[in-house]
Length: 573
Image (cartoon, rainbow, N blue to C red; front, side, top):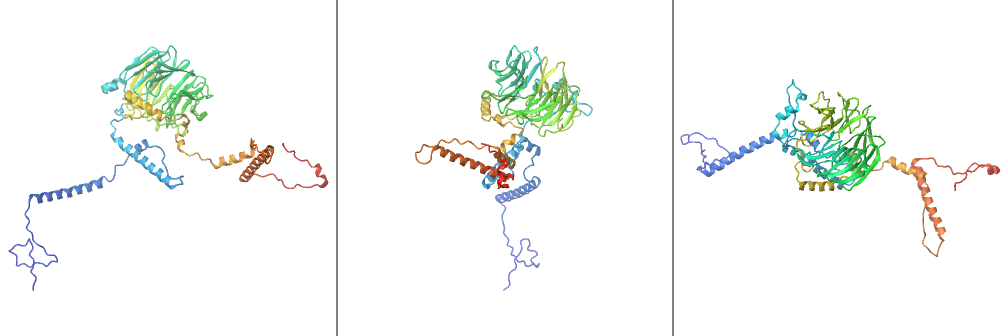
């Protein structure tokens, strides 16, 4: 019986006579009525297919996470990590490796979060024919917003010359003059905290850990005031002070006086942790290195020395100039140090390597003050002119970034943290100057908050006290704490060698009173004999290790009857 050929759905009734090709699969015809539900499902399937194709294209275009800028990674780095060497037990090695992975993840996340920062660094932009040094403060004030324009002001005071210092969060300003005028105020809102006259000369002023405590180095002694001008302490052990620096993470107030005595005062417990003479004479040039909290002193021989409260000798010395030093400044990262001398020269040094100067500049006159900003701009004081150099450490700056001339002699100046402001203490008052791009545009509220409330200030003070770093940890390399102090082979040999030159220890032994056995004298002799034998054995072992020649105690040459005339060495009793 013949199989019936199946008819395809696209064949009409007219071409029934045409011969169709036999196929391996049979096709059945179904008549489906298109409904709204079927059309909706078909539309959804098409949309899903298109969306999947778009996702595939995107994945090919942006494969993986976006790359991170290596400079930002270096900015958030926490130092050298664990390399996997030196740990014997695999369990502890695994724990350290997991911890290191967490630190790397935190570093990457912090670097990626920089995109969320709201502020950018400012700058001055001019045409090719013009220079930024030609832009005066009046032009800058006329072209900035009203809030920034109010930050440029001048105070005319009659008790100069004045020294100015900003608080750590950059909100408060402290002024002290040689004629005894002492004042503190909120320079943003111009609200005065206090204003007094101490009736004697003030050599230096400094904020302490909070803006409610102030230190003033007066003619004789060191005085501590609160933010209302009331005297809290008078420290007579610190007298005739020339310069002061406050170390915020160690709660130390460091000072040097006219006779070369250096003092570190722990203000949290009120004790002096270091006090000695540096044997360098009068050193009126001093600054701190924020990276490792060491003090940099400059003397009249052109030598810069680094000091810590634990060591009575300098940690390092650098011959910077052949003439007396006039100013020293260290940047916030502890990488570069700027020095200036009477010979009108200014040098930039890599303070980590203590090598020769990276840059050498010749100025119009001898600078009387140097200061680095948060963005590594360097301000130089030349008589009554302030010049600001941008990016002058890593490369040679041909001309200043900004220049400001005044009709007053400059005493000192400080960059305001988190603001594009340079505060200048002059012979007749104080002047605030706008320097675009000098300050850090974004602040960490947990580190220093310019807008902190009274409650936040108290909490930050307690937290800082809990995280206080001991004074014993001030060294040139702050990462030495993380290293293990393993004695070297040389140290071990020297200790064994010293055994040969040491007297045996005296054994003080009081035996128990026993009637039986030997007497007390016999027991003492036995114990001393045992101790002497132990010492001899130790010295013999040390001689074997060091391969030192031993004395020959063998039989000597015999002369027969004449042996009695051979001299014999006397034994020491």
